[in-house]
Length: 435
Ligand SMILES: Nc1ncnc2c1ncn2[C@@H]1O[C@H](COP(=O)(O)OP(=O)(O)OP(=O)(O)O)[C@@H](O)[C@H]1O
Image (cartoon, rainbow, N blue to C red):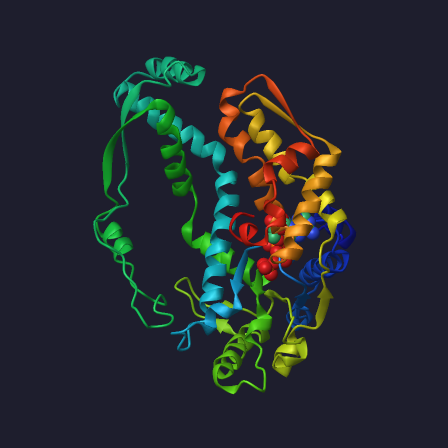
């Protein structure tokens, strides 16, 4: 859990996302409130529920990005789910609880990463010991071992091939799921695990170079040092207290009174989601997970349906409303140049690996922003996502030829941009396919 103040959270988000201050502010408060809750004791701590957020705004303006960055900042487990996934044909009560199971898997990865880092130094030593043994054999004297260890550390032996024993995870047995049974993973017997344990963990011998053996052995050694049960317990706690679920396209599961039929299932989805948001306990193969304090960020364009079309109970559970505005030309300019890993910076860095220096002039940035606005207006407004397709098109040729252009400099100016987009942007039919 991070102890950033709301102001610090916003300024951290500012490095990646242009504008949308209201949304940044709302998520910053939500995150800080979680920290505040953790400082409370006893009953009060349980009583304080998260103030879930409803983000309203067109596609591609930063709704997901803000939430994802927030989760990263807090090292919180995060998943994005399309609410409409549950209205697809064949839905028949598809398990919304799966959201929480997936979130727990995300939580387990977060905890595992942290633990792996903690034990890295020890795992490294253990892995080294195994490589030395593979090189000199069990019976070798301490002094032989030491001299090989020194050679190993100097990288002298990197290319030498050795045989190592690693765990054999392929049991030859296909894993299976029980189709049509929601929640079938709960308590499902994992045959692979069972067989693995019964046989005391099988190993197989592999011939690899010293260099490659390290990664294999490091993973194995760090997993040995980490207590799996402890990881699961910590992950469950992390998910319950810090988990964030991003529910996209919530407006698409609003029931519109005039079209009954298909909407029955939509309202059904809202009803299914409600307990998760209100707080329930979901069974997972690792144990029960309480959802009371998980933060839900719902989002939608709400072009047709309005937030007031949601079930009243759901409206009540999404008390914080923030609007994200459509992006304009100036925003596009700033997204291209000011964000930490902007597309422009990414292309410059990629081409630099080939020894080709690319310089974007100011008027090139203007031109790219203009084209993105043009195509968004004429074809379909997909927000900042348009920048990726436009940039890809402009740099298509140089991406192909960069390998033959080392030690050169390419200046991308407005003329270059126009030349490589040509009339595409003006031709709505063509742009539909290419941009
Ligand atoms: N305001 C912004 N600043 C910087 N980058 C942005 C901004 N808005 C969008 N982007 C970029 O555009 C892409 C799409 O944005 P994002 O996934 O946040 O869309 P969204 O608003 O969640 O839309 P949808 O509801 O369709 O998922 C991302 O790669 C993101 O980095």
